[in-house]
Length: 322
Figure (tube, rainbow, N blue to C red):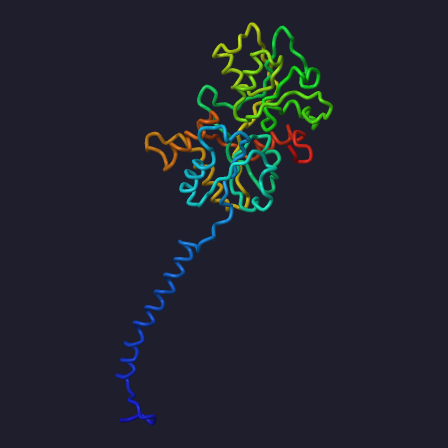
């Protein structure tokens, strides 16, 4: 029987049409699925997940044998399943304003961390050294005994005093606690300043060679000089100036999901503690980079713990500027 339009009809015809259409429908669905997966697993060129920048503050990076940023990003990225790229700058002032939106992690001295708004970043970890120097250091005053211990020599004898640096609390925290940083006097009477926030050895070398009578430095650096006989305890004394401080700090952007922040903390704490399993990919390079600033890994730094430091030394960043 013919249909009114001259075509064939009936169940057999409809079944044939269905068989002819099905392969094309299945193929189209497969193409859509592949395109969707490609968009998820392989984003188009130029696109990236927000917060993919690891920012490292290091004013003397050019003098170190190994750049801290690239090895740390190369290790952390795969461990966090996130593409990380590194940028090393000497200070916060050198970070382009438009860059902050993409900063996911920051590795910096603790005084720098005080300047980062707690509404945007939260602390994850503090640097860990090899035992027995694996506890948090204090700021200490190393002084020439013949000159006598002075209270606040950065004010009372600035021309005979050198501060370890201006970015760590061990290097300058006690000297700027009231918000009056002595190197900003503008009167020509200011203490000398070290340039490396991660190592005060150069400052102590200048001290022992007779350039200064007083130095404010990291406790562990001073003890290293005393233990090596470079500073004779009969000629030099040491006084504690501060409570233990975090020293080197890692912060994470609050824009990262909570699960990503937790994972980042776990990975940081595991660095250098995987000897039996051989460690994560890139761990050796990361450890060698950290060794350049005398670190062996990281310890936990809880947010309330850092808030205590923030309250104790808040005046060290008057107006949020170094």
